[in-house]
Length: 492
Image (cartoon, rainbow, N blue to C red):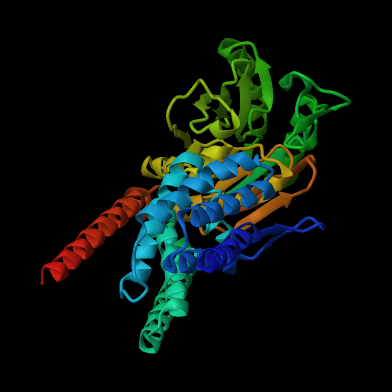
C-alpha cells in the first residue's frame, strides 16, 4: 500500500507539470515554461520503474492530458481519451532497467512511437515539445529529423534525467550525466549553426505578406447570432462583421504597406447553398478584388454542407484553384466533405518583381498544420510559401506553435490569418516576423517581409516520417535481445 501511495504521489507530479508548460497569464501573454518539457516525464518514469501499478500510470497520463485540454478549452473527456491509452501502453509494454546503458535511448524510442500515435489521431498540439516554439534557435535540427526526431530527443533527455536520479550506481550516474551534457551540446551547437546559415538555403527572393483578420463572423455564416455574438468555446464571438468592411480593410493594408500576398481567415465567407454559388461569388467579387489590388489572395470560404474551403486567386484575377480542409477536427465533430488532396499553385513572379521565374504556393487550413505530413507533402511538391486561413479561440493562442514547427521542418514561410485571435507571419527559420494575439476576437492585420523557400524538400519532408519506424524497430529488437539474454541465463 505504501509503495502504491508513493508511486501515485510521484506520478501525479508529471500530471501537474504537463499543463504548466504553457500558462496563460491574466495580462494576456502566455508564459511558456518550455524547460519543463525536458523533465515532465521524469516523475512518471521513476514511479513506473519503482513498480507503480498499471492504474497509477494510466491515471497520471489521463490527468496530464485532461489538464492540458482544460488549458486550451477542449472538453476534459477528449484529454482523458488521449492520455489514458498512453499510460496503458507505457504500463503494459515499457520494461527497462535503469541500469541498462541503453535506457535513455529506449525511453526516447518508446516515446517517439507513442507521440507518433497521438499525432496521427490528434495532431501535434498535445506534444510534449509544443512550448519549445518560443525558442526557434534551439529547434533547427528538426529540418532534418522532423518533429518525430525532436520527440525522440526529448524522450531520451527525460530518460537520462530519470536514470541519473534513480540509478544506485554513482559511476553510472556520472556516465549518464556526461552523455546528457554531450548530447545537449551537440544538438544546441548544430541548431545555432543551422539557424545562422538557414537563409543561404532559400531562394533569396522576398515578398511582403499580410494576414487580414475580420475580428468576427459574417451574420450569414452562422445559424444563430444572439445579441450580436455567437458562443465559441465558451467565448462570445462577434457575428456582426461585414464583407464591405473586410474588403475596405484589405485595400487599406495593401495601399499602406504594398503587401503582395494577402490571406483571410478560415471559413469566413459563406455559407453558400452549394459549390456553384460559391464559385460565382468568387468570380464576381473576389477575383476582381485580387486583380484590382495586384495581390495573390487566399480566402477561407464554406458551404452549407460544411465544406471548409480555401480559394487562391492570382494577381491577374485568375482563380488558381480550391482546396478542401484535409484534417477537420473530428474529435470536436468538425466535417469537411469536399477534399481535393494537397494542392499547390504556380504563379508567374512578375507581381513580385521576379520576371524570369514563377512562385509556387500551397494552402493549408488551420488544423491541417497540426499534422506534419500536410506541410511535408507541399514541401515535396516544391511549394515556396504556405498560406493558411485559420480560426482558433483565445485559449488556443499558442496554436502558433504548430506553424513554427512546420516552418522549420520544411524551411518554408507561413502566413496564418485568424478570425481575430492569433494571426502570424513566420519565416523559414521559425521566427515570428509579425503577430497579433488577443484574449478577445478583434479586427486586425499583420504585415511583414519573408524570404521564399527554395522549392527543394528538406530531409524532414523526405524522411522524417521514418523516424518512428526506426524507433519501433529498435524497441522491438531491444526487447527481443533482452528476452533472449534472459532465457540464455536461465538455461545456464
